[in-house]
Length: 240
Ligand SMILES: [Fe+2]
Image (tube, rainbow, N blue to C red; front, top):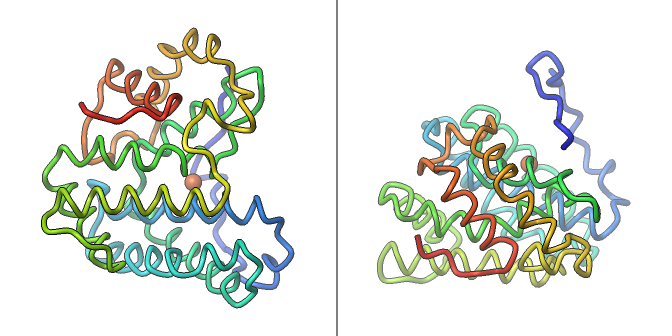
């Protein structure tokens, strides 16, 4: 098992936000980093540490990413430039409100398997719909996911329907970006099923202990994390 280094001493003080830098990004990197940015904004908006300063940054970033990511992926350079700004707004939201368990799971599954690395943004994109469903059992989180859904003009008669509409929209974005629905389908199946299940207990425990778990709107046990990771491997419905 490999462990990432993270500390405020190695956090940058300055970011150079210049769309020219992103103009020649490969298509796959555009998809993965774009969905990473969407996850930053969504997790920041529902984080237990969200506040009046982070909410507008998160919501506006979500709207921009929803509008521009697919076009940017398909080669629209103006949309690419707007995505470059949107990811920075999402970064400003999450560096203050912090994140949640989508990131905990992406961090701990990233370098855990011998078949290959699960790229960070792609991991987030696959796990986000599952975590939205899991977190939405907490009414306050469901209300905030519904806020997001309304803000990007999705339809639903109540919070539950709006949460489901948001999940469906994220899955549809993934499809348009050629991102698989689950780990089993990742890169043609490079993450071996037996190895995934062998390491499930350890990975789940590490994910619960990740720095991002503390600000997730719904607390999670190691047993629940195992179930959630299993849903992410097989693309199973989250019903707990
Ligand atoms: Fe991220």
